[in-house]
Image 1 (tube, rainbow over the protein chains, first blue to last red):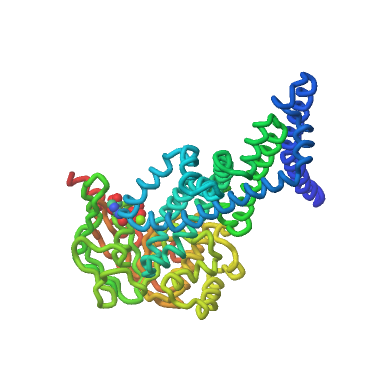
Image 2: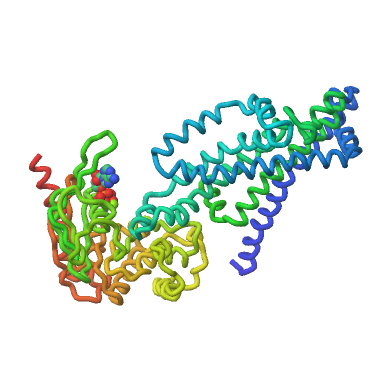
Length: 273
Length: 258
Ligand SMILES: Nc1ncnc2c1ncn2[C@@H]1O[C@H](COP(=O)(O)OP(=O)(O)OP(=O)(O)O)[C@@H](O)[C@H]1O
Ligand SMILES: [Mg+2]
């Protein structure tokens, strides 16, 4: 076998892999494109009225026409998500540490957590409005409630997932509980934290919209409600699309943060698959 | 250096049944001696090491290390586990320095020592890699460096090469010998391999299973430095044969008694 033969053999799978990756990456876009096209053609072909099912082009033009207002609503929703999600992260991490600190604490705190979790948040929203007033607080609290439970559970599971050898290493070095927590348990919980964050960030969008449905004068949830009330269905569709985009972008942001700062956590996950 | 007297260890399993892991074990390992423990799976070898490390307290009996009674974990031992158990989030260098960090000691002054240790086991240049990027054998070598970082006079090794392939295993055996030659330590080394035990040890301790007892305590008087070339020598074969005999005589004896 000649040397350049070897080279060719090396090159070929590489090029093929790149092509395959490109093809795989383009498939979702193609399918979305086809779907939108079919949607557009159906609506036009069957002359479906706007208020029942608007064509994609109609959704775009009506949403774009009100771009300043829509941007304002989007910003309001983002604010609710940011505060609710941030609050959930800030409270759930220490709570998870507390829950895993001793069986007695776990036995006390867990039932309360489960109780809170089993209350439907949608049902809670109107009550919160009465209690907290018609401002952004009820929305933030609903968002918080929706996403903090999966965070606590996954981080607590992570803190308890430490292999027994790690704990023995800590004990043999006479590490204090604090050092054991910071140096070993917390890093061990990082992959679990991120799977919790991925669930929570998606739920936080749901929480924000639920909050805005119940009581708000701004936000994409409010926009959907007010525009459907006046049969401005295309605008409602526009808001829904923006919500979906927010969900996707925030989810990908969490993925990107994990990749950038905790690459070992990501590769670990890939091995597990 | 290490003395176990009348050690019995009873575990309570989850269903409440009592498991006698060790029964009336007497063992002493002299200072700077290399002791190997061989025995069937489940005979309490790991339990023995954890007792010496002070990670668990014996049900009965006393353990002394360096003339002082063991009543808790001690910083003068280094432990190498069966699996490398490196932290996947920390670089190789940080992993080696981890015991110091866990002890709350400064690490800056030990950086050079960690580098030297890694260099010694052939991991020079891998300091900044994550454990996930290393092969199993390289990880175990890093784990040995980690056990050596605070220069403990006692090294407890629980089947450290158990998960390695035969070639890497032989290489690591020689590496451990050269480490020990350089910095003499008291080593208690658990293994399943008779050859490995005879090649490494000053004395080989054979244990029996359920409950774990010490069957025999054989001195290995082969000249040092040792190498795999000695494996073919009649002296080596004689020691290996007597270790093998005491493992299997015990088994046959047990079968007869039943
Ligand atoms: N924490 C524990 N709780 C209950 N039983 C235990 C515990 N640790 C060990 N044992 C029991 O004690 C016995 C000895 O265990 P040990 O791990 O010391 O064996 P070993 O000789 O190291 O075995 P191997 O060679 O397979 O590693 C086993 O029967 C095991 O089931
Ligand atoms: Mg064992």
